[in-house]
Every structure is written in structure tokens, then in C-alpha cells.
Length: 99
Image (cartoon, rainbow, N blue to C red; front, side, top):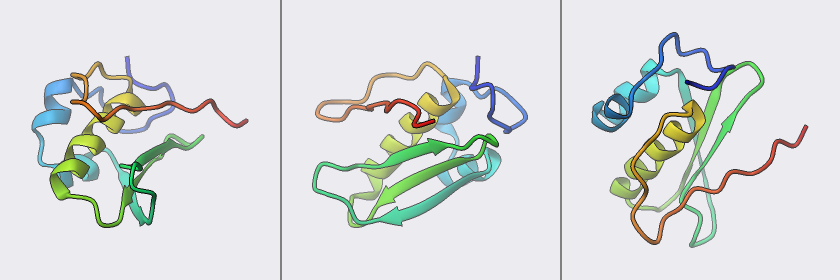
């Protein structure tokens, strides 16, 4: 089941998240992306707003292939879609809600 607040209009499958070209995927899910400088171990971030909006943070200067892999995994986590695990040394860390 997808995140209860997300407003993408459908429940995407893991196959959809993995196979759809990333620009098309972000557009279909109404995901916004911003770029930020981060430390050498920061490979991205995701935030789901109270209104169901999704923001992905793309680190500046990281490889495009890494971004595509991590962005898809973060979207899967935000949408609560079971995804294959990331390869080592990558991992997703979910932070508790600040509210």
C-alpha cells in the first residue's frame, strides 16, 4: 500500500519505479528535485510533505548512475513500495517525523 498522503493518483509497482525513465517517473509522480552540496557520504534525501508532495534532494557532483539508483530507492521508500535492496555500501536511513 502506498503512503496514505501521497497524491500521485495510482499505486506504482516496483517494476514501474525501476523501469520508467527517471525524468518520466518524477513527472508522473509530481516529484520535485533540488540540488545541494553534501558531504562525501551523502547520496541524497527525500521528504514527504503533509500535503503529499515529494521532494528529492540530489547531491551536487555525484555520478548520474548513482543518483538514478538512489532516487528510485528513495521513491520506493516514500511510496511504501517493496524494492530490491541497494548494493553495498548504499543504504536508506529513515529519520523520525519531526512533528
